[in-house]
Amino acid sequence: MSEIPSGLHYTEEHEYLKPTDEDDVFLIGITDYAQGELGDIVFLELPSPGDTFARMDVFGTIEAVKAVSDLYCPVAGEVIEVNQALDDDPALVNAEPYGEGWMVRLRVTDPDELEDLLDEEGYRALID
Amino acid sequence: MSDNLKHTPLHEEHLRLDAKIVPFAGWAMPVQYPSGIRAEHEAVRGAAGLFDVSHMGEFHIEGPEALALLRTVCANDAAALEVGQAQYSALLTDEGALIDDLLVYRTGDEAWLLVVNASNLEVDRTWILSHAEGLELTFDDRSDETALLAIQGPASSGIVARLTEVDLDSIGFYRFARGEVAGVPCLIARTGYTGEDGFELYHDAGDAPGLWRALLEAGAPDGLIPAGLGARDTLRLEVGYPLYGNDLDREHSALESGLGWVVKLDREPFIGRDALLRQKEEGVTRRLVGIRLEGKGFPRSGYPVVVGDEEVGVVTSGTMSPSLGEGIALAYLPLEHAEPGTRVAVRIRGRDLEGTVVRPPFYRDGSLRR
Image (cartoon, rainbow over all chains, first blue to last red; front, side, top):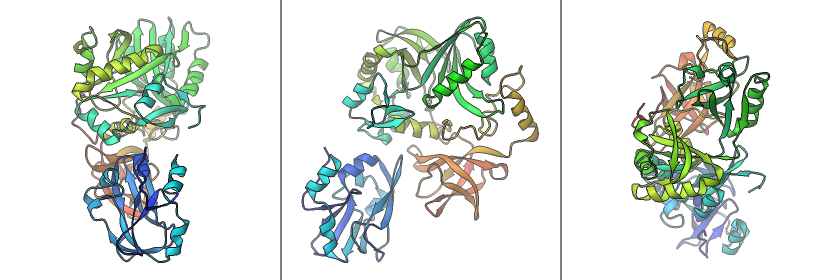
């Protein structure tokens, strides 16, 4: 059974947005279910601080041993930090998808867009 | 998962082990177990892995004219085989196109076992039978009744030895013997697709679950784990073995695919020989080569190979090599770019990643001893 923490926002493409201490800043990563489906993650191509994305823009790619997948930005925003630790250890995404395996810190442009994302129950219904 | 997929006799075992099941050549096959492709790959390189490859097809051909048929449809020379010996071979069209690659085992003076790719089974059977008319032989497709387990890795021999009376040391590379393993009658072949020492065990489908469990139990202390098609693919690619449907197809001739050693052009006629002789005389214009990439990013099937701004080829198989930690690929390149040491790049989603043409295998430290 995949872990789906409450209090996060989810997309149908298996990214999550996790709240931080700042109201309009969120961490983006992929869900426990997604990392399980991808298998061993070996490389991530991530954006740079300052890059801006519209909702559902591709913000990066994730390489597993067998396959490569696009990463979608759940809501519009500006990247303010990228998780450098993934450069050396991309498997953190497998080990701790909601913790040390986060990918980018995003300042959200329009908080209203969050309402279109799934909550814990909605996401569980999607993957079950 | 759509259920018109065929199930191997070990399907329930895979489900119980929580394997991820994917469609492959019409079969529901385990692509990986919860340990993951990397761990399965490393188990095979360092200890042993157990693969269910029961989707492969098995044709038994027997009779006084069986050899004549094989010498007509197979490009290698089956007459060179002794009883108890196997060889890698190829089925070609009249034009020299590759229908399939296969293994040919000589099981008796006039008895042969052909092992073909699941994806080509129907085509192969029709093709072979169309050339068997009027010949004194029997053709028996026992694919559905036959299960195939591959135990691969340096610990394989020690594990199997605990379950059999057969003297495994007497079975050389590409040789086989008959005998019981864990009480199950098997054809025990020292063959494989990983670059490691190991065995392929052909047996009755009904015996498969018992043999599977016995091997996993006997090998657990040595680090044996079940391994799926994902690891099978990274393992075979590291040692440069081509895969039909990716690296081998009807668009590229056996000479271009690096199978020149399989095609015995100096013997009496077989199907495709004339076309290949012509091609050999004229010279091939492209060749299947290995490419080893530097830096981060991994090649995948379909990515362009570029020199400068010119697209010179396409990746036919590519992966991150778990043993090397680098991207490796096979690709057909024009001869002027096919020499080992040539600098090329693979275009990975718009970015060119530099690499070097190499002669496979990429990984040379396997336990396989020829």
